Length: 277
Image (cartoon, rainbow, N blue to C red; front, top):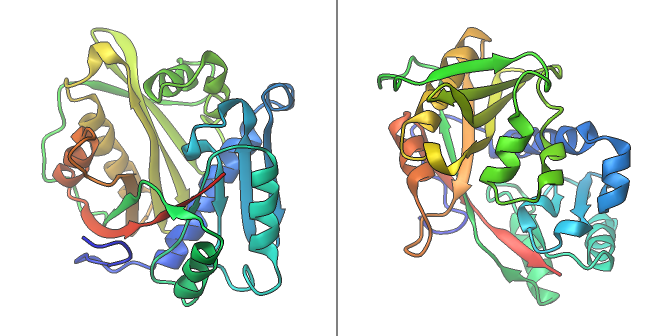
């Protein structure tokens, strides 16, 4: 699928999904203890409708250095996007500027980025589905929803699964128990070895923070976590569920991509990520 092209049998609003994604990352940043954030250069700032976040101790991890909302109304003309990009560049991090493909300002924003010599990086595929019951059997893996971050090493699993240093657990450890968040671990061989989260925003549910420790990979943990979240999203009255993973290309693993499709999600659109820094 070409960058920016949309394709799905489900109805969805990519601008709405973009807004929910900004909330998802904002709340992850806001949940981090202030002392940890200060020690590792973790900051979040708003520039009008544009949300910029950096982690200077993870300067080469663009997944955690983001400029979100580039295609929001008034992001470009009053200079908000320019100010956000300038601030992120001053932090000397490698960051992504995701661009929602179906917004009215998409073409103008991409022209602005191209004119400043920014280049396209690794794109993310967005997937959507409605809340119909899963048509696949849940793997024989115990899935437990957490009431707080103290119950299981949710953040530690996420950090290890994403290849982050130990302190990176603090990006995710305090999400369990927050309003509208549902955080889970999957137990393999009696131990918590995989995690995943879901943020509910009205009738939309975003799935994310899916990670598995090496010993449990290939044993159905993430498929079980998808199954549970689909059921819980339906019970909460959600109508649109969405999730993302990296674009499927020959030199990158695609297990996550396959699991998402097996769970009944459809490719919705390829969301470009422009690189800065």
